[in-house]
Length: 315
Ligand code: SIN
Image (cartoon, rainbow, N blue to C red; front, side, top):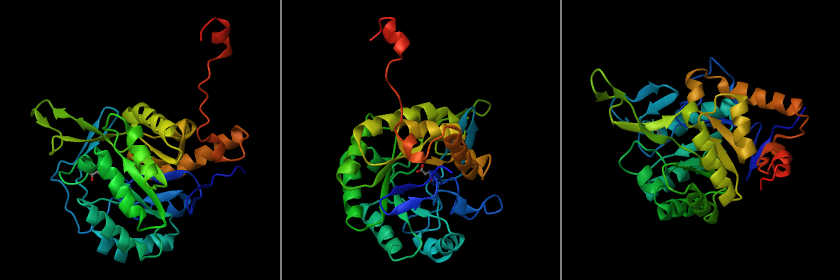
């Protein structure tokens, strides 16, 4: 059997497929559909210091080839998460990556420090890229010195895997990835959602209450792939590829472009077990291609010119 394991820092993921933050709750809501220990990992909904109600409804709207959301980081807060969610994830054998959101650097640090004291946290993904909140979110994520400072402060506080989740809503994602690498991040997650909008033409009202939201799903996959490609050229730390992955083939594309792990998000709204199925599909592909390890896929993109074109005089 080909090896599907990927190690980042001190975490070995049994396969490269994780659930994307915010699309799988705290990893327990979908238990009727799958065994979470079969996933590469579960990335939790963003956790903040205090519980958050999030934005007013309507918070989600389906579009032709994707989904708009404006949840506003609704979550139970770190105390409840650590008391009543994390122990269950640990019992189920999930590899748990805690996604942290905050409106100040101090809040990021406090939440991470509280998680540090607990068993069952494999690592962190830091949300500096939520497009749906006034404080934090894109204020941080589109300002490179802030992203660097957050990474630096958190790195000083943990030996666990630290990934920074980047926004695509910047001119150069490579610059942000480089700042994370320079400050000691173990990985960058590329990408969070794109700012988008939808309008109900009968009422002429925006389809979601905050007018704009974060756009995800198959429509963004080619754009997300290009962002991963740009980040790959900018840094040598692992990249976690995210954006419209609906099938094993989509996930494999991200890995060929340079992602070490992938996250599945919008697809889970159609099939909560999509992550496990995509992991099985990747394994099937490795066997079919007679590859020994999924690691051989990472960054295996061939950009050389085809011999027939060279023979025809193209260069
Ligand atoms: C939200 O809670 O609004 C979405 C989170 C995100 O996009 O980071």
